[in-house]
Length: 372
Image 1 (cartoon, rainbow, N blue to C red):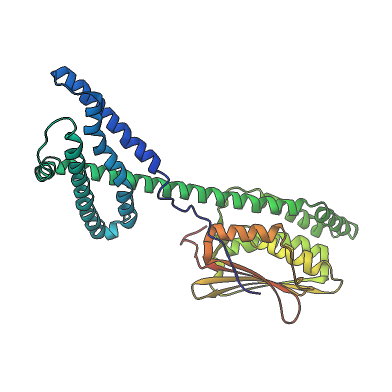
Image 2 (cartoon, rainbow, N blue to C red):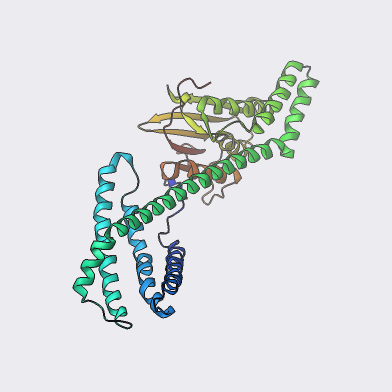
């Protein structure tokens, strides 16, 4: 079976989604300045009708509205990064020169043409010179403000993406806890566990019965512990798994043999919390519980290059040619996608000698020094 990479669900930027709002903003500025110009002309006794003030003032701001996507494109081309500030400065110096020149040249052409409707105007060459001499600094300031606003939107978008990803990770962890809790409270599982305790008591193996009840309590407590983050060191994940396996060992007795094989240094690698338990549960339910003879499950962890490979193997009947993933595998697959994107993979396959194997590949992340 080929490796299945995890999907990387991220918020894809949509460059044009703020364009209507930006156009509305520039239009509002144009209307406001036109009204101000009309009132000012009335106070000074200068004849200026509404048509004239709108024709004279609106093109300036509407042109900035048309050029805003170009500024936004330059911001995306030169994202804020202190390590690459010379490139950012160069891109915006060139961009400001091009955008401001285009704005002033177009404004001069439009103003020369429209002003002729109301009064005699100087030739276009003089208008161009006048606009560049009088308004270049204003345009440069406007460009800086627009670029700053675009950066603010970019930062806000990244913040929202981070918040959404964190919420998804927390949701994935909550789903894993709920799946584990459903497994522990599954009537069949719970009945078998209590029946095993009852058998221990009847055989007067009271210490073993108390130990099993304690394990059940510890397992439920660990499932409801909300202080754990999305990742924990592998050694802690194996400790959680061992509480679950202690109950299954009593249930299956000598029929079930569990082996754990770890590479040196793998114990400190970070793995998704509550990841192994549903994988092992899946192996027991589908590969071990249906067999009457002795069965074995092996959990292994290997450091390979910059990755960590976890495998859960069983000696059961293997995978059906068209397997249907249960809740445990589906949740695990989704959580891997949220945590690691395309850096992680989950493969379910048959083994040559019989049985099945779930292999999970993760990027290698080690716990911080001094982790408790």
